[in-house]
Length: 343
Ligand code: PHE
Image (cartoon, rainbow, N blue to C red; front, side):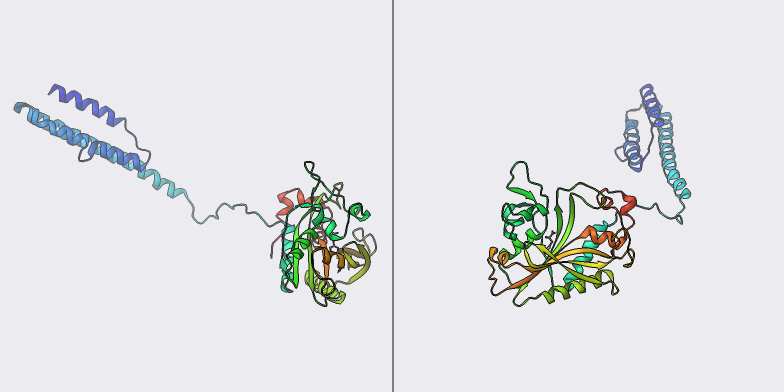
């Protein structure tokens, strides 16, 4: 009897100190003390060892212990439940939620996607290629043999480890790769990043993005080229924009031209962006040089083609009236988040 009293006393202390911060802890308490194999049941089993004269007293004691434990359980339960109720009471479900800052599409991606979608409506397929190129795909195949002065037109980054490799200076290299596949007619646009060793300023960067285009079939003419680019300009900038072609020089096209559009900033009256001329150059183009076709294994007597190439940053600057090219690569979200993507 002494023994039992002592045991119960100890258990009571332990039970009294119990806490339950979670539902799981509450359940653990219940199993430990009130479960079918719990402590209360086990101690009840001790009754059979108690001497007959003490049974009454022991019964009372055990009963009291059981009630004590159950009360503690209820107490723990209500503290836990009470907390939850209190918390729910303080939440105002009608308040707007916390806004999650979502990323936005980069303006260069937006403009590039728009350029691509315009040419896609004309049946041009998208072709991509490596940014690290060899000399042949970037230059030689494009009718720029070694030591050709036209190579100076594009300051090239060569790889230190192996100067036979370079960072492509234009995506014309992708056009070479596609022509080599020999599937004709060919109608592709080549978007992608290109690199040139230029001093970074508001108007120049050592990397930028291009979309170049190529169409090769039988009887492709300069008129096809002009019509394609007229369509592009109208879709990109609207019906009112004026277009002009100026003769130019590229080793890989003959004849070659540059295309200007009337300045979107001043409407043609003259400003700093168009250097007071009313016109801004947006792309280079021309009829693919027969040597380039031959270099890629295409019969230049049978096939002709046109090619063009434009800088995406230039178009984006005109489109959004952005005066500093560097903004595109600084990743300042105050700048980037201003552009809404329709593409
Ligand atoms: N590859 C030329 C450049 O990067 C652009 C161009 C492409 C010009 C196709 C004519 C024809 O400057």
